[in-house]
Length: 144
Image (tube, rainbow, N blue to C red; front, side, top):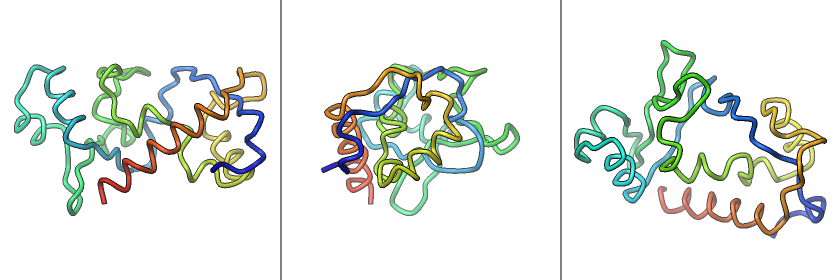
């Protein structure tokens, strides 16, 4: 259940700036289904994909980032995602991650980083926000 301050929806429209795919090091957690989809898109084996494009952190697998390129996601080219149609759930649901929805303050902090979160952006309905936050939470639980 989302906080009441989200009842009317939230303003967001992706500008395709790529900022959410670069910056400080981090993890883009992927599951078996996503691994298979991306490997198929790249027309390589799952083993090759895992060796060349991912890192293991404990029991979890993340897409690799590129420290020499400001920690860009390995699939960021220019401002675009080269695997956009197969991008992981974590990417698909941004910025509607539970930690960004905890409070107005957390949403505004994220807005300082994401140019798509702006007052003149179209409102995203609460139902979509709930669905995406739930997907993110379910996926992070599955990967623990």
